[in-house]
Amino acid sequence: MSHMRVFITRNIPDIGPAKLRATGWDVDQWHSDEVIPRATLLEKVKGADAILSLLTERIDGELLDAAGSQLKVVANLAVGFDNFAVGEMTERHVIGTNTPDVLTDTTADLAWALLMATARMLPQAQKYVHDGKWTTWGPLLFRGQDIHHATLGLIGVGRIGAAMARRASGFEMKVVYYDAYRRQDLEEKYGYHYASSVEEVLHQADFVSVHTPYMPETHHLINAERLKMMKPTAILINSARGPIVDPKALYDALHNGTIWAAGLDVTSPEPIHMDDPLLTLDNCLIVPHIASASMQTRDNMSELAADNIINVLSHKAPKTPVNKDAVVAQGLG
Ligand code: GLV
Image 1 (cartoon, rainbow, N blue to C red):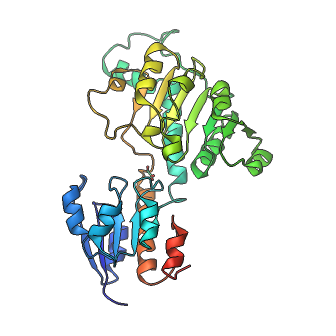
Image 2: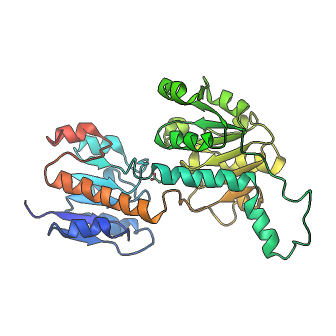
């Protein structure tokens, strides 16, 4: 096996980098918990055969040109790959890979936690206790929304959406979903209800959870008009990508009581600016894009990203490519 150069753009769980170092290849890493400055990134990728990237790195024509024509694979440590200019990668026969499956349940767990925490007002209740306001048991205190027997509306029922639906079954919820691809298998097996549009989901659901990829078609999919279609008691959960929801419209909807609450793992922009009005609202729970952040899953993501690189640089098909045409073009598929 010829000598290969790999660049890793951040500190990540070492299981993947260790596997890459064990090959004897030249493995360079940006040892920081902060985003690598773009100019440094463009410098560092020069001559790399493989890049292990995060969703914070834009993999576009400029970066691919800076890397050079020997670049064979960019392995994203994420299932989403909206940071990839896939067309430009494929044109240059650069394989892109992501980390699906290994993070499905962990991500759904966090989305579910947001759903439960917003429904039962846990952040507000914790603050109340910490602020020394708990003087008595109160019949009017922190009355939330029931989760059991409510209707969960899913926008997108891919791997993570389906995992969310499985969690709902334990709470005896009705599941209504919209997806460009109708999943009759799930309807027959679990009794999920298909809605013919996003709007129909919004009208029916007590909880709306977004699980679509981010692309031009899903930019501000949840906008002012659509938020008005939700019930005033409804809760919006976004663990997909921030810009799928219009943040100004969401602020208005939460502030005016158009909807009851929101739980966000993702924001637009990311990180959220400290003067963003969403941060002034009690009924908006925001966490810093941590849905796949468990010890085990982050190890699994690191290992899968490394395995994808090892496969491609060893002239084998990657486990989880996002552009099969580039796999074929490299003669690996
Ligand atoms: C995280 O957001 C991911 O896409 O894995």
